[in-house]
Image (cartoon, rainbow, N blue to C red; front, top):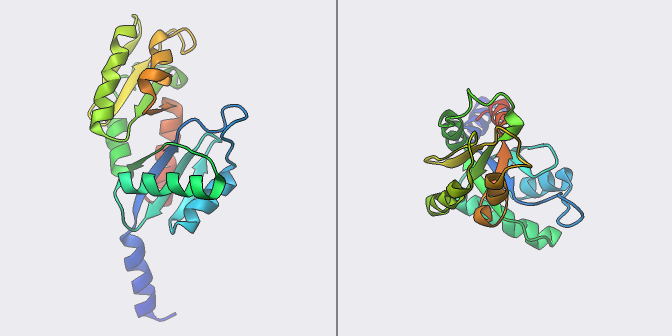
Length: 196
């Protein structure tokens, strides 16, 4: 390979932006089953590179050459519907957005159990603002905040006992998708690994 060809490849890869895609409500029971190998293959077929999945609940890191988070989410959701015959809401965030979401978490230092700290991701600011509806369900020692890019809920006494968590995971948060803090930290590590 010539130096010029190698330079072109390097230039192309530097134009790629790292993102995460979060699928809502897959592999929770018998409906909406998606194998992570199939999901990786689907994103690669869309032209994305460095595709890597985390856990079995629809967490993907990848690089894309162009497109906003909203258009990438639409493209992925449509491809899943077309190729796998499953309707799945998809939320995409850039690596930069993820870094801000992590830095803005006001409960990161006080939550000793990352599985009890939930982060709600939304497709846009209007949907994020709607998560204010969860606030009336919060009971001390729980803590809740709608930030600039995500909402945070610390269920100090456990998620199963929390009416606020039930609201976030249910009707009030139906346009959002939620991950616990441990998963978000692993996603950030995955993003860094692929160069985000």
